[in-house]
Image: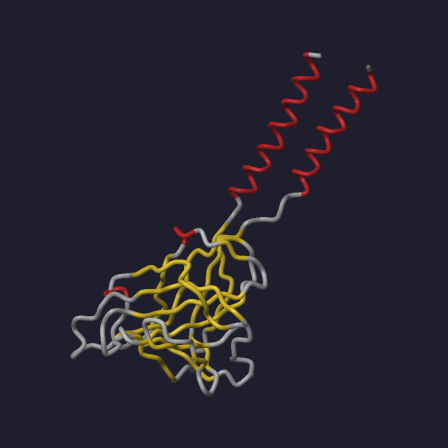
Amino acid sequence: MRHFVVFLVSIISGVVCLIAAENASAAVVLDQQHNVPTSTADSSNGAVSEMAQTFTVGIAGTLDHIDALMFQLGAPFLTNGDPRLSVYNTTAGVPSGAPLVTVQIPSASVPFNNAAFVTFDVSAANIPVSVGQVLAFGIWTTSDPGPYFWLEDIDNGGPNSYPGGAAFRRTLPNQPWQAFTPPMDHEFKTFVNAVPEPSTLVLAGMGIVGAACMLRRRRK
């Protein structure tokens, strides 16, 4: 009996270790992106307008951070409010509902005049994402006129278009979202803290426990 208990505890410990190893193997990875070097258009984000981009999740896990290709103007906009990013669910491909999270970054994080990818960290919200899910994120601020510019380009269905979403805009605070005409895509990257699928090794370990129990029953 004592030997069987020791054996059973060892098996269970092994399963726990496998689960812990799975959790440790989760990693932040690039999921979606639209990054076209030839972008020529941009949108202004201010206190009266919010620009948004929808995207289709390709990796399961939790949303970690979002990068947007942005810049801000110099003088006369010298008192720019901090930019904010809100994440939304969508309905029929359009941003909808209250924000799942809103974060802000210092104005100094956005370069002047020359666009660069700016990071908005949403990891603290632990937003779960699944493959095929369509989400949206919008960028806005408290300054008016809008001092921040988020690069975009025309979605003409060609190889440089983003097939998993589209650009939207609305008048704050709660006016309906409107798609761009012609269709546009903002320049962005989304990153996911990927969660591995249940390992077959864990299932095998559980099978070993069951087999051990059956073996002991037969010996009786």
